[in-house]
Image (cartoon, rainbow, N blue to C red; front, side, top):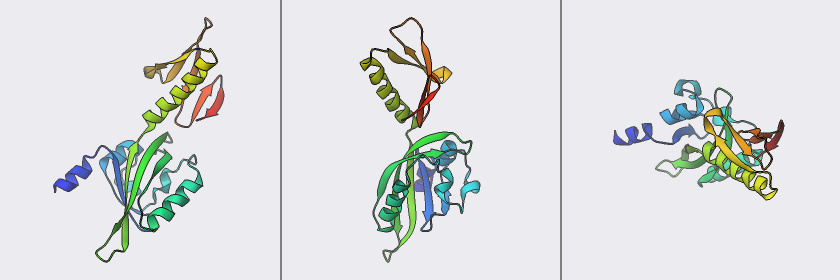
Length: 173
């Protein structure tokens, strides 16, 4: 009973899949992060979260690693039910039965979107400062950053999980 409460109240998303990848369980944090309730994803493959931003080689490595019985760790740029992109750091481990056969996979995923955005902002800030263009100042309530340039006017830019929009130009992060 304590274990199930711990999983239900975990600060990270937890999902359990069969060996074919079909979801058998998700905790409430999964629903909070992705927008999908358990009934919507049970029996489905976690690929429904794919954004198209994570290289296919990541998924190939993931499956080769876990089907070989080893733990896998890595990052995904996923898509929520509402279409919004977010970043996950995932730990995926095989679960074995008493005979040593893999019967399930356990996925533990931490939403690292805020960290990735901060890293992107720091990289942009460094580049702006190196070229003497100013520095980024977050305007969190408004959802964008202001560049305080050395020149009198300011410019707005939007920092998304996968790109930076500067002067209307998309820059992949």
